[in-house]
Structure formats: C-alpha cells, structure tokens
Length: 332
Image (cartoon, rainbow, N blue to C red):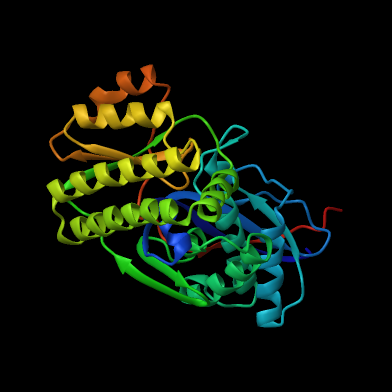
C-alpha cells in the first residue's frame, strides 16, 4: 500500500443575474448546480485509481487548477501530491455545458489539499475559496471570481467584488416559480464575448455605461423578486434582464443573445414564464422560470425544435466537500 488518496468535489454554477455588470463591481446572484468536478490527490507517481462514483479520470488540468492546488499547499505547508481531475459531469461528451468547469476544478483541487491536511473542506470554505481564487486570478485576472465563489460555497449566493474586497452572502431559492436549466448545445468562449464588451467600453464609454446600467437595474429587480418570492416580479425582471443583455450584445457587436436563446425567450413567454442567458451568453446554458402550475414537460417538443435541451440537474448544490478517501495500492 502506498498511502491514502484524498478526494474532494465542487459543484458547477449558473449565473442568475448580474452578468457583465459583476465585472464592474455590481452584485450578482450565482447558483450552484449539482454537476461536480472531482479532484483526487494521491502519492507521487500513483495513477492507479479512479475518481469517486466510478467516473473516468482526466489527467489534463488547466493552469488555474494546478495553481489553486499549489496555493492551497503553500497556505497549509503540506507536501505536494499527484492530482487527477474528473469534470465529466460538467460536459456533454467533449463539449462543455457552460457550468464553470474550470472554477469547479480549481475549487475541488484546493479542497482536496485541505482534506489531505486533515481539514474538512466544508468547514474551511473561505480558505478553500481564497486558494482557488488566487489560482484562477493568476490565469484570468479580469474575472470576477463569482464562479469560484459558487463552487466553494454552493447554494444560492449574492456575490460582489470591488477591488480586492469580496462580499458573499447566502440567499434562498424562490418557491413561487419553477427554475430549470436549458442547454443551447453550443459551447462558447466567455473571454471572446467579454473582450468585445471591453472594446465597447474603450471606444464608447457612454454606450457601455448605459448598457451595463440597464443590466444592473434588471438584476436588482430580479434579486428583489427572488428575495420576496414574488413570481410576477421575477418574470418581469427576467424579461428585462434578457432584453438588457440582448441590447448590450447589439451595441457591442457581440452575439450574447443567439437565435437559440431568443427562441427560448419566446417559448418561456408562451408558457407564462421568462428566460434569460446565464453567464456571458452566446450559447451554453440559460435559465427558465415558469409558473408553479406550468407543465414543463409539455415544452420539450418546442425545445427540441429550437435545438435546445432541458438539463435535469439539482439546483442549490452543496459547496466544496470531501468525498470518501481510498487506499492506493502499490501496483506491484
């Protein structure tokens, strides 16, 4: 036997509100999704095992994942171990679902280091987040960190970052509406869309400010609707948020609201609900709010006709946590 293997996991995420505005210091609501990245730390040279739940291990890590691991190791003063990472749950085959797999992987790696030091990641989520955010920002310094916070803390959170100060508060999912995820089938590079929006800010600051202010207003209204569990307010604010993101895309020459996302908006309205892109838009996943009495299954034919797929994933998932450890064999 070569010693124990330490396993930790972290959930994916969807942005509920505040896309693009969160990069300017405005608050955003972020919801954890129970599609988990699983990190596994074993003795150096040990590649014998597999990730928890029997899923296939992937050995290629993004630099943010390895940096998160290294920051956690430095913070705790522990010796490096070999890392395996499984993000299958956040993909459809070779395509990312747009659920923040890199952030989930970074948090899972950080959490696994804490587990290897005899600490419970669920009790150390603040420190797990700090290490993962440091690793993520070393690679993507312009990101807000909202996806990393969601992976670390789980549930529904209100996130805001201004300079070096980060505010994270827990929120409660509304009961007056049905919230579902829909996948467009088209992965998107968030950085490409963000660069177009930043280019708008450089060439026409006033137009950029107006577009971001519209998103801030809609996001604030959606946050109030969720806080008061007011279905009508949620639907109205979601419509406004969708429109504001579309307007930003038009003025920035960025395909934030694609034909598929526009089709989802029409389908949602036909059922008395509302829909909006989640994250940068351009594809990936979207949010669908429906009245409690709506028959979501009846919308599946309309989804299929528009090239959309409903995702049956539990929402409000638990944040970073340890999974049962294993004993590694010597392989001899």
